Image 1 (cartoon, rainbow, N blue to C red):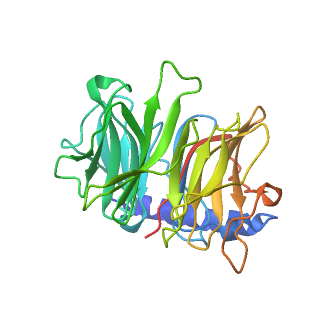
Image 2 (image 1 turned 45 degrees about the vertical axis):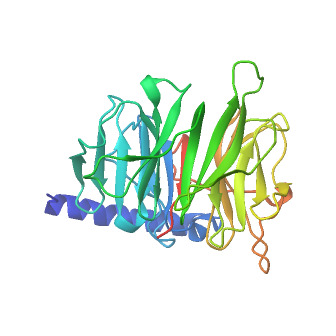
Length: 307
C-alpha cells in the first residue's frame, strides 16, 4: 500500500521532472508525447522512464530495476515486467505495488508489447529462438493464448486495432544477413499477408492512427535505417541514412517519429518531425536529437503506447 512518504516522494519527483522540462534549452521536453517509454541506464541500473503527459516530461520508475523486458499500458498506468529469473509481474505506478502473475510465468516469453486491450509477446518454443509463437493476453488473470504459429520464427509482434504485425524469419543459417520480412495477420478472419520483400532483416514497429503507413527498421542497405511503408501500395520510402543503427521507430498521433540511434559514440533518442500539413515524416536532414534527463547514460528500448 502506498504510504504518505511514497505520496510525498511521488509529488516531489513530479515537480522535479517539470522543473527539468522548463530548464531545458530545447523544446524537446515540451514536445514529448504522452505514452512514451524508454529503458535507460543511470550509471547503476536500468529503469523505465515514462511520459505520462507532455507537460510532465520524463518520470523515472525507481522501483523497476534491470528488467529483462518491460512494457507500459499507458491507459492503465501499469507495467508488465519480465525479470531476469523468468518471473512475470505487474507494477502499478500510482500504488507502487508489484503483483506476481502466475498465469504469465514462463521463462521462454520475451518481447512484451502493450496494446489497447492487453499485451502481446513472443514465446520461444523449447526456450530457443529457432521456433516461436506469438501470444496475447487481455488481462493478468487468464493464461496468454496463442494467436500466431507459423513455421520457423516470428518476432516483434505489434497489435493495432484488429491487425497483428510481426517479423517472420524465412532464411536463417544459409542467409547472411538473416532474412526477416514484415507480415500482417487480420485477427478476426485469420488472413495473413507478407508486406515486405527486402531480402534483409526487417521489422515493423508502429503504424499511423489511420493505418495508412507503417514504420520499419531494416538493414537492407547495410546499416539499420528507418523507412515508411505504405500499407496500401507497399511502397517503401527510406527516412534515415548513414553509418548508424536506427531502431524502435515509434510514431506519435501528430506524425512525429521517435527512435533510438546507436553509433560508436553511444545511444541517443531522436525525432523525425512531421510536415505540418501532410503529417508525413520528413527525411534524414530534419532529424533532431532529444535531450534526456541528466542521469541517463544510455538507452536500449523505446515504445509509444497511446491511450
